[in-house]
Image 1: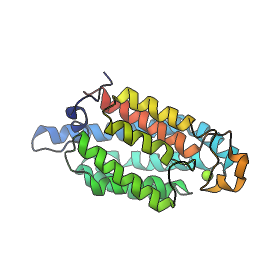
Image 2 (image 1 turned 180 degrees about the vertical axis):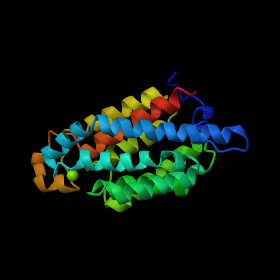
Image 3 (image 1 turned 90 degrees about the horizontal axis):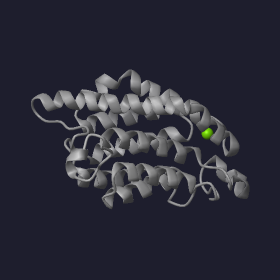
Length: 223
Ligand SMILES: [Mg+2]
C-alpha cells in the first residue's frame, strides 16, 4: 500500500474513461473530497491556533467552511470530467474560504484544472501541479522561502517529479511544513510581525501538508 511507484497509481485517481471506469472516477473524487473535508474539520482548531500565533486566527474556520462547502457538492463535482471538477472546486473555494487563503487554495485547484488532462498519468499530474504552483505564486506575489503554502507545495512537486512513493511524499510535506517554523514570514499578515513570526509554523503550510497526506493516502493505496 501507499505506493505511487508507477503511472497507474495516479491514473486511477480522477480517471475518466468510457464505460464503468467513469463511475469509479466519480466514487474516487467524491471519496477524495470527503477525506479532505474530514481532515480539515478534524484539524480546524489546530489550524486556528497556528494562525492565532502569527496571523488573525481565521485559518481553521475559513478552511473548514470552504471544504464543507465543497463536501456538500462532492457528488456533483465528482460527476464532472477531472479538469472541470477541479475548476469547480477551485471556484467554490475562492467563494467560501475567504481570508488570504481562499484565493490561494482556489487558484491552486483552478490552475490544476486548467492544466491537467482528463486521464492524467504521473507525468501529467506533475507538470500540471508545477503550473498550478506558478499560478499560486503569481496570485500571492510570493515565492518559496517566504513562509507560505508554497514552501510545502514546491517540495511536494519535486517529490512527485522524483518518483517518490505516496508515503514518502506525505512525509516530505510534513517536514516541509515543519521547516516553516524557523522561517521569517515575508508575505501575508504574519510578515507584519517581522522576526516575531520566527518560531511558529505557517498555518497555510500546515493545512497544505494535511491535504497532501490525505490525498496521498487515498491515491497511494490504490497502486
Ligand atoms: Mg488568517
